[in-house]
Image 1: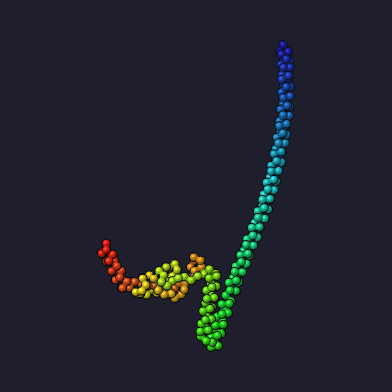
Image 2: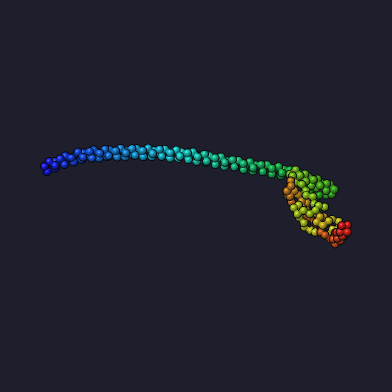
Length: 218
């Protein structure tokens, strides 16, 4: 009986061992299949990533090319504008200098007349004509004289070089002009150099009398 039991035990063991061997083979095949699928998927992802990188590099190259072309066009535009500006300044300068030449001619004729002993009145007339021509030239450029004498002193338009006592002009009034001032448009080109009236004893007395009169009337 022990021998029979032992034989039956062995027979019972073998059927269980074979299914386990079969399952192990199936597992190995499953794992191999999964590994192949993962490898294939990884390969596909790598190819897709490489394609995306190549596309981005192409876009970057195109943008860089556009940037360089735009930069070159901008530099060329700046050069053209600078050249046009320089040409415009040159033309304006030549025009101004050309207008000055007749005035120089008049001055030279006046000097020649003075050396030849011409009548002083003729020389004076020639100089006055030259001054008028020069003022006309300045006026054509938008430059006009600044009114000074008899005007209230304005530090934006006048430069005080002297203060004088005057019973004729109120204090702080321009009484004389040493150098005429000029303005271009509303901007002062050169302030006038002037002398300005200052307060005198007579002015102070008159001011005091006026003040007393005003107080009496009140």
